[in-house]
Length: 404
Image (cartoon, rainbow, N blue to C red; front, side, top):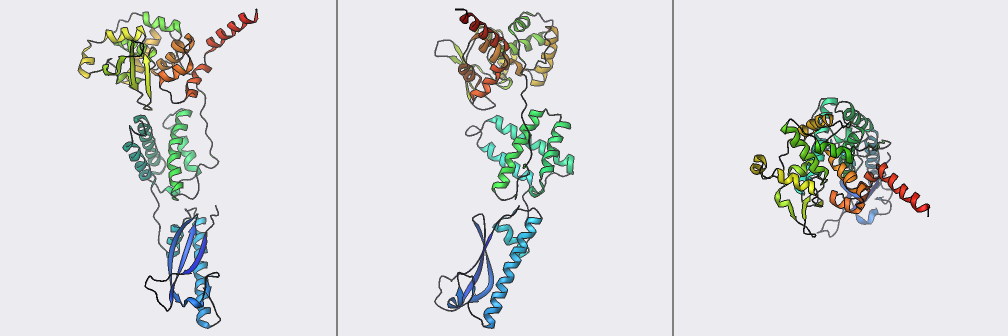
């Protein structure tokens, strides 16, 4: 990458200057930013051409001065070439350091990532949600693990990150970490923000993401049909543990709350709504956006069922929620026992609320989006795309109209 720069020789008179020779300075400018150098030479102002940036005259002393300034300029061009050849960042400061023979210490990737995450942590609750911090914390850990796996190091100079680094990192996420395509793409996207910070500060001369392409693939969301919900709700389990997990899952199906929001739900989050009924008033853990959810009868029955549960009383929570890992393990068992041939995870409950419970029953998408705490209506629209049943019903109504 050929980054342009300019050189200017100029006189810099001291504040107390009255008369006599004036020091000659050299200014390097790159992308509007300057660095200043002393040449170690002086000249009388009337013997200096500010246009040419050289001494005026043919005397030996002037010719010698101009030759010296020419050599400084040539040395700067050579420093610029060396930076380009080394694919190092070309800034006014890096040119100055190269010219002076100083070894400029590069920024370290993990340190930049940690500084970024600390700034996120400082603003959680104001500009960022806890989920955002958690996402970048996990991304940093994956980056550190990749550095050790690939290079056997705990940190690396930012300037060593190139296109191959990015493609190798993606390969690591998908092969070693067993991330899905979409999960890997999201981690790479988080990493990309750190690269943009480095580019903005001039720590990198070019983006390693140039010519790199990745794409989020549309994934079919798993949700339960009305018949499957009914089957699960009516199932008698010999194990109290499975019955409890079923109830918590159903609660999420009828509220749309994500796992972490169900786990942290307290009675103070349940208040009388504008219609006089009980509502959940809670900000989503992931995005810190507000969710306002009227409680349906099934959800209220589940709340009342566990009101005197010892774990709920001890922890001050509405429901006795086990770990997400245990929930998902038990849900697989529940799906088998209920004859539900789907890869059931807790998040399927949120999808079920969006589809089977609300959209299929005519609840407007804007209302569903608000209850789910989505920041963008397009996120909610993804659910509408998978509802073949709704499409069939809409077309049947159209057929009936066209008969008229």
